[in-house]
Image 1 (cartoon, rainbow, N blue to C red):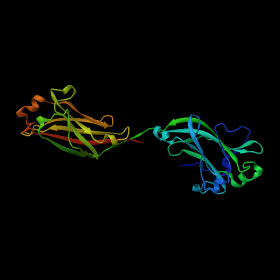
Image 2 (cartoon, rainbow, N blue to C red; image 1 turned 90 degrees about the vertical axis):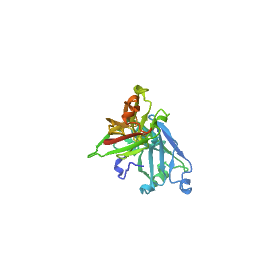
Image 3 (tube, rainbow, N blue to C red; image 1 turned 30 degrees about the vertical axis):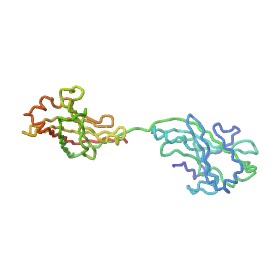
Image 4 (tube, rainbow, N blue to C red; image 1 turned 135 degrees about the vertical axis):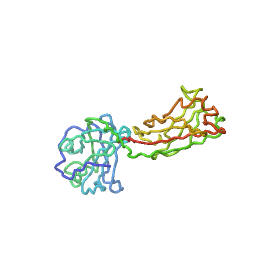
Length: 315
């Protein structure tokens, strides 16, 4: 969790305010018991400001993970981090912390001296002050911050802008791309009773593929042609926006005279476009004709040759 570090006290602005904090107050009774009970960090409940939910995180003895000594540490945390990650966005805010002087009934206000807005996003959702106030000053009864072992902290948060992170992609062309072949032997072809049949998975350029064959056709080829497609079998593993450019050839092999029936096409495969091919790959009349060599002893031999030329991934 990333923090805003104020190691140089000149960067911390301090002023006095008569007005109470607008957005949230933490009142702690029996403050000294925090140390006795081993509570090194206290997280407040969630509160809303600027349409978002926030929390305060107080280290009453200093944030030891940041090697803070002799000071109180206080941070503002964006409470709904999951939404920042899901939407890949960030929220910019200006914030101020308050410490009540119970003697004078006013507040010490601690803020960024430059008044800069701070971005809250997936990798930085906590900003604050490692050295909010020296423990010695806090404990000094004359300052009014800790009276009768009780104290009051507060916060104001003003959202200045919201923005989504920029999108991008990286296109990687594959030099000297190698083609991969897969032969699918389909036995008892005339007994296929499913709308379509698929081959076993095979690899090409580290991706899994399948052949889809519709023995009685599909769409415009229904009832007149065999339809055949190449399908990306591992499309579910692709990130949104990622795609694969492949050139492929589908063949039904002529088992008698090697007059193969072939169709060649290129396609960008993605999670939303998982297959490509041919509705009218070969007519049923030609396929079943004895001289075509497509079906011998009720066996059909199908081949896919796949060459992946490019991969585009989101950044």
